[in-house]
Each structure stands twice: as C-alpha cells, then as structure tokens.
Image (cartoon, rainbow over all chains, first blue to last red):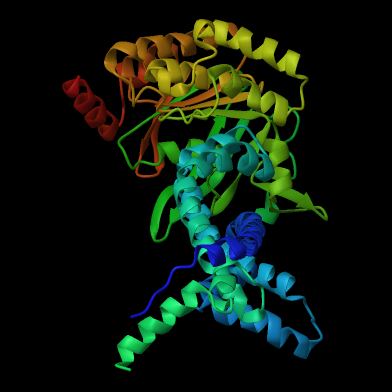
Length: 199
Length: 270
C-alpha cells in the first residue's frame, strides 16, 4: 500500500479542520443543552397524575429510544417540508439530536428521581410543601448527583453522534476530513479498500 | 352511610380536635381499619399501641393525608379533612383543600426523613420560609428557638449525616414544630433508635406535653413511656380499637383478653 504523508498538506487543511471542529462542538453543545432541559420535562411529565399524558410521553420516549438517530435526523429534515415545516439543516439537526438525547436523559433523570426515598416525599407532605417546591427544593437536588455519571456518558455519546448530521449537510470535523479532495485520509481509506478487495 | 350524609362542619360544643367517623381503609382485599371511630380532644395526648399490622400507623398516615381513606370521614378542628364542601354536599377533598387543612397537622417519622442536603437549621427553616412565607430572619429565630428547646442548637449547622439517630429525630421534631401545628403525630419515633438515645427523644416529647397545649397522637412500642405521658391509651387489634382508657387502667387492669395477652407478651420481651 502506498502511503505518502504530506506535511504541507496537513498544515494547509488544519484551519478548515479547526473550523469544522467548532461546528462539532457547537452541534454537540446545543444538542446537549436542549436534551438536558427537555429530558427533565419528559421525566417529570411521566410523573403527573394525569394518566393519558404519562402514557403518551412514556410511549414517545420508548419510540425515540428504539429508532436510529440517523433516521430521526432524516425524518425531521426531509419529511418536515411535506407538512409545511421547512427547517435549515442546522435547526433540523439540533431538534433531532436534542430530542433523541432528551429521551435518553429523561431515563437517567427518572432513575435518579425514583432513587429518592419515599420518606422524603412524605416529609414534604407533612411540611405541607407544594408539588413545585417538593421537586425543585427537595427531590431534584437529591436526584441530580447520582444522575451526573449517566449524563456524562450521554455527553460523550452526543459528540460521537454529531457526524450523523452530515446526512443533511451539517459539516462537522469528520465529514470535512473524509471529504477533502486529495486528503491523506481519503488516500488511506482508498488503499484500505483496494487491499480488502484484492485489487 | 354515603359521605354526602356527614355534617359539613361539626356543631359548636361537639368539636374535638380530631374526629375519625366510621373510617375504613383497605389495601386490596385486606381491611386495615374497619369502621374506626376515635375522638381526640384539644390538648389531649393519645397513644396508640398494638401488635404490628393492627393498623395503628395507618391511623396517623391517614390523618397526615399520606393515605386516602376508603370510607367514612375525618374531621380536624371541626372541619372535614378528607372531604370538602361543594354545592352544599361533601365530596372527596382535592389537593387545594388538603393543603389548606394539612397546615394544622405536623408529623415525625420512624426514620426521621430529614432533608440530607440541608443543615439542621435549614431543615427547620424550609417549611416556615417556603410554605408559610415567613421572612428569613423570623424563620431563623423561630427555628433556633426550637433547636434550643430540643437541645440541638450547637449542631444547627451540621448536615443530618453527621448526626446520630437521636439527634436527627430531635431536629425532626423541631422541624415539625416550626410549622406551628395544632396536632402533632409521632409515628414510632423511637423504634429506629439505639436504646441509649431513646431517652433524649422521649424527654423532648415529655416537655411538649408539659409546656404546650398541643394535641398529640402517638404510636409507640415504649409501654413505660406511653403509661407516663398519655392521657388515654388505645389498644388496636385487627383494624379496630379493642380497648381504650386512661393509662393506669389499661396497663394496670386491662379488661379484654387480647389486651392482656399483648401486654404480657410485651412485658416478657422486656
């Protein structure tokens, strides 16, 4: 396999790779921010006494978790316009990835909330606290620390999933690297494929 | 009797602080309380004893609205707790009504249930500030006064994990009292404690009986303590009050066979 490393080429593409890295950071950051907030909403919605809402949210979370992210990105971007929802690649991408991860994070929160002992809820009742105060001041502060590890896993996960946004044309670092004409990576890849195919 | 037939309010002159009227509680097919009728007068200290599974803790939990009831009605200070008036009839209470009524009741639990992410003082101030809307300074003064009373003022900045069981329970009592309830419920507050610290908690309750005009309902296994401080003792057996009376009478000269069996079994265990 022929492989020639060209330093001047590597230096030349570096600024573009860095710019694309910024896109990756931005996409992962915004997506995660959406997921952190929306996930909490989804987790709390499953605890309301109103059963239909609980059921619908539960099923929606299960559905999102059991379908591939790449399909969801496709769906939001390409199927949306059929219903008159026309979104830019960035907006569609952020909605899809944010929604996808919010479903996972809602499960992390749910486990955290369920781990708060029943006695804590009863103490809140005995002190006549409102439902809002019970969650904000007592339950969530105790549910968050054990959730942090799980939340961290999904932050790593979201970085690894941003390349999928390339299917709708959001260029992150991996997308750029493999699409650069005459890039070292492509040549390497080419050689790899050739050998595999016995050419 | 349908709950619509109970009085909207108890008449003047017949207004105990707490009244259970034909209260029934079921878990599935198991009847935990069967047509319970019990009055507790203002300022009275009533102790509930009985074998486990006799429904004594359930009595307190229903009064704290931690459990719903399946039949009958509970009145607190003459007003319905489990029900509310709508168009001149009583219907099951909604959360708003419960929040209004709950403000006159406080409770201490077997496992303390202090908020672990707050200090002793913050635990006591939480209710007065968030629920009663008191200014922080006033809530702090009230909480410190109560922590002083239960002997925990030196530990006010400690988190519950740094306190012993007896200390935690004393903070829990201060926390409940900071809400200025008319009725205090003690649910086996010494059962989870090491024997050597039980005294520090019972002494606090003893002082409450002496110094405040609080109505108190207590479930306990400390028979000696119950005998010392109660105005009346109720012996529960299988969801019913088998026998009740002044402590000297109930402990000294129990009339019913089941009461005698229970008391002698407890005495042997001691």
